[in-house]
Image (cartoon, rainbow over all chains, first blue to last red; front, side, top):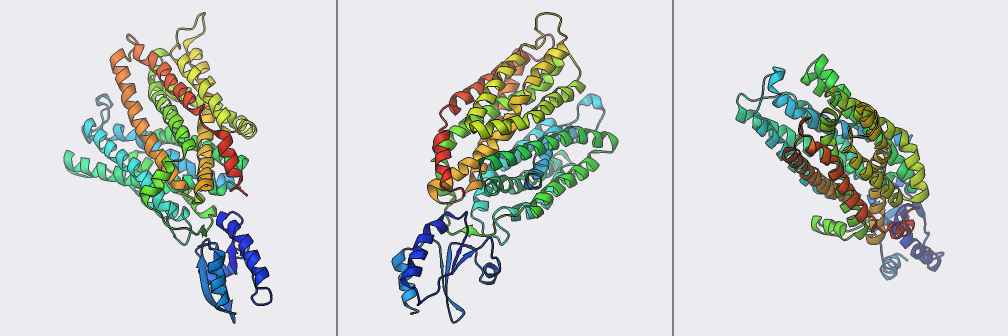
Amino acid sequence: MDFWAVWCSPCRQIAPLFAELSREYQGKIKFVKVNVDQVTEPVGRYGIMSIPTLMLFKDGRPMETIVGLQQKAGLKEVLDKYI
Amino acid sequence: MLGVRYGVGYVGVALLTQVVVQWVTYFYAPPAERGLAALLPIALVGLAMVIGRIIDAVADPLVGFWSDNSRFQGGRRLPFIKYGMVPLALSFFLVWIPLGGSDTLRFFYLAFVLSSFFFFYTVVVAPYLALLPELAGDHSERTRLSAWQAGFNIAGLAIAMVGSAWLIETFNFKIMGLVLGLVALASFAITGFTVKERRLQEAGEPESLWVSTALTFRNKPFLFYLAAQLLLWFGFNMTMIAVPYVVTVLMVMDEGAVGLVLGVALLISVLCFPLIVVLSNRYGYKKVLLLTMTLQALVLGALGFVGLWPGNIPILWQGLITVGLAGFPLAGFFIIPNAMLAELTDYDYALTGKRREAIYFGVQGLILKSAIGLSSLVLTFVLERYGFSVAQPLGVRISGPLAGFFVLAGVAVLLFYPQDLVTEKIKAVKI
């Protein structure tokens, strides 16, 4: 789950990477984007303080939280742990 | 309407400092002929004021840095306004309740309350100003918000100048402090509780005060802007101090006419606000500021010739026409700098990827307050050296052209401001 906003420059930078990963992991992991200005409930529920924040859920439970700009290799490493 | 909800906070910004500057010395060390009790020797009042002003200037970049890097639940700006406004109003009120049984105790008391006042003033005002770039989505919105601020700035000045005198005359200084403190509190509360700030911030590593300040000074367009602002404020502050002398010495009128003269200039200035907004949207900030500063320099030069016009034009009209011509340049002075600095903080973000709006407003505050202090010294020197009486008016006569010279120097610096580069860069970060 990618928490982002239109005014957030690093969020826009990470967006293509997020889209790329969603294609690579199609059928294995569901990728969801949450615009924090439009959908506020999960922001409060998961205590999001800054963006971009990426969260990984398994069986409805948050397993990983990654804040800020990331490299593709680092993100793949995290994702691979859960498939 | 966002412009009103945000801009109204400027009533408090303008009102509080104007009242303190206008009345503190008079309240603690009234002129002998007024028959009021002197609470402190005038030199000690001046010293307490200097201490407060130093706290004010130094706190500017510190509070800016604190606000930029804060991680409060309510945001980076609004919590400062919400929690700072009550101690600010309280310390303003306490200035008018002199305590202490001796000069020494009263001096320490005044130095303490003035320092508290200026500190909390910065705590509220630096984050308040830093909200502008975030609230404004594009160039025209930035100009529009800045114009609302300017309108409320003038409203605050008017309340300070007219309202404070009326409250003091009708009641006393204590009531004036209470009423105007509450007015300022209400203006900050409207902004603090009705404007919405982004609650989330972009992720990033916290940086040190040193790095943050150094990056500010590495922003070249900002340096040109700041130098031009410094010279503009230098001239403007000299003029503000000189106006009462121009009225009483060159126009040979009493002190009551000072309000009339300033009122004419401010009224025409407000009428010119829409024109400045339209021109800024069409030609950009640099060109309009260059125009208004050049005109301002010319008008200041003309101020030295009040009373010397050929023909039978009454001196009152000579003075009013001259200050009336200052209305348009003043509108530029009130609106453009805040909008321009907001643009520069976006430029910084485009370069560094980090939002540090408040440190920019803080650094500007520090530099401009130093310029204001220095220009006051220069002007008093000129008046003393060359005379400020009807018999010897040369000091007053040259103060306008001298102020105009500093503004013109600001024009020369502003010519180097790379407006196209700034506009181009921020296109990439503004949605």
